Image 1 (cartoon, rainbow, N blue to C red):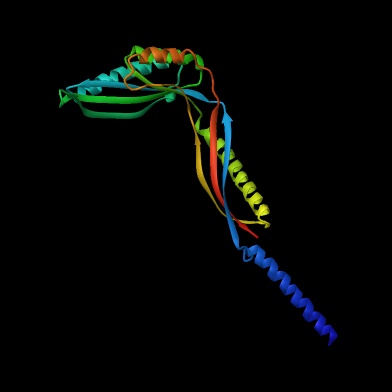
Image 2 (tube, rainbow, N blue to C red):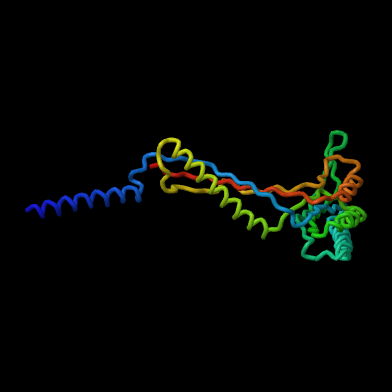
Amino acid sequence: MAMNKTVIIVLIIAIFVIGFLFRDNLGFGEKTKVTTQGQSELTTDPDFVSVYFLIETLNDSAQIAKDENAEISEEVLSRLLELSLKKEDIETVNYNIYESYKWENNQQKREGFKVSNNLKVKIENLELVGRVIDVIIDNKALVQSINFEISKETENNLKKEALAKAAQDAREKAEALAEGSGGRLGRLVELSTEEFYYNTYPIYTLTEGSKTADAEVRKAATNIQPQKLTVSGNVRAVYAIR
């Protein structure tokens, strides 16, 4: 009889312990949650310089405007390839044909058909930047900006690292809050990416209405020094507190 009582007591204790463990593992004992924002910031060297420029032509005939634009574009491409740039490093970002109008004496006046060809040149050798700028300007194209940038491969690698560090930052903040409130950090309830970004470093940006754009961009191209780029990651995490 005493043996039976002992067995029953042991079973009750076992059930209690198992229930307690299940409660913790399944989150039944978690009454409070904490939300934290995790941030990280990395710096990296740029992979290349990008030059964005515009070739624009205007004519009463859409076909003539298109042909003239193509002629200039082909000349620029040919000259750039002579600088040992690769063809795949020169790409069209946007191409548009439209009727252009301007305001004159408080009236809208038709100018003709305008063809806009926005292009981008990727330059890995900094010594070539000045010569690329000369080719663009000498062919009456407009330099819009010069930036330090990173490749997609570099961006993807840094994105993983930045978000991993941001997630760790969010956990550390949650642990501090849990300990500060007299509890223990529980399971991760939710984790989401708030933001990932990197800012290109502008060497030159065309200002609207500038009358000395060619001189300004030539000057900028002669004083290029590599600059660090900043990569940032942000996450939102929700943890349970026991």
